[in-house]
Amino acid sequence: MAALRYPPTANFVQKTLGAQLLAGATASATLNNATSIQNLPGVMIIDRVDANNVETPTKREVIKFTATSGVTVTTLTRNADSSG
Image 1 (tube, rainbow, N blue to C red):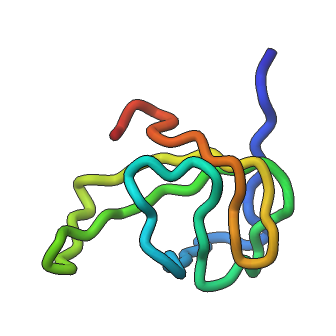
Image 2 (image 1 turned 30 degrees about the horizontal axis):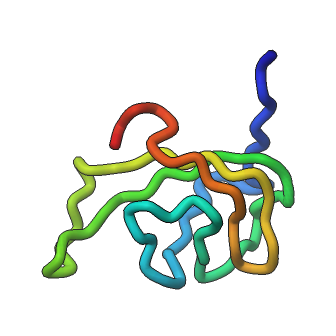
């Protein structure tokens, strides 16, 4: 059975992580805000930064989430496209 994923309510939504996303974290991820993100299952793409806070956009990760709670997306499926 296919799982439905829902788009944001606006185009080109970009968020910043509100806290570090640890490698093994699957419970939740905190964002700077959840404006335009529906409280429904969705997908987010993380562009990583290295230990020196240098952006490494070629090292992205696709993460599925089940819902939002405040500024948090919950129940994460990491490496959702084997991009890891």
